[in-house]
Image (tube, rainbow, N blue to C red; front, side, top):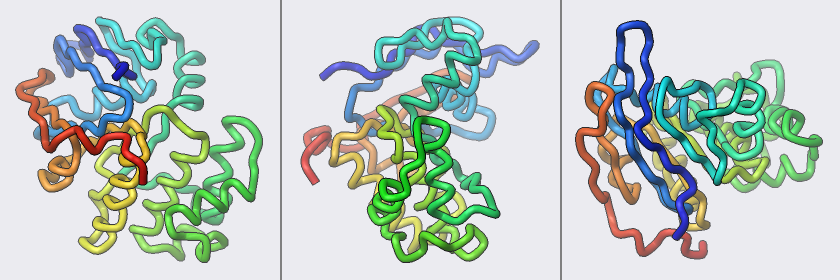
Length: 230
């Protein structure tokens, strides 16, 4: 199994604050990894570097064979657009666009909007009948599923999910986690930042951050199901 992501001695310094220190991490293609840690441990900083939303202060980050630690902002934007699907806790949907249009926006920045393809993405997450609804007309769980459809529309190599169930009730959390489990069975590579041990238990491996360092890592469950057919 070839690695999709390799971090070597990654650090991030803000003034006198060492947000990340000597992070070494390899993520295999098709793996589902979770990142946990207390507030201020560096989870978001690490996610931003992996997601090409920020650059490390030192070290090397290889994503799909590209050294993203050497790229300028334009290069990082291109990698993020072409290779990464982002799912946020706060959804970040455009309030005056329908669910369908919110998915098509991601297509617009990547290539060309395709309404039929965007509708198929919404159908995949169970929202075909809600395609013409505005975000304000959708529940939190439905909004998060629109975000997942948006993240998938450009066939990313890596899905990054930052607290994807943090704003959801138990029923919607179960639906969203079921979608992630399905995506993993299909062979998608997923990295999930979470504070919820039950979410981390669904993933293959869990990384624990403390004070900007990897304090521990453990297998959450056997890897044998990775990449299996749906």
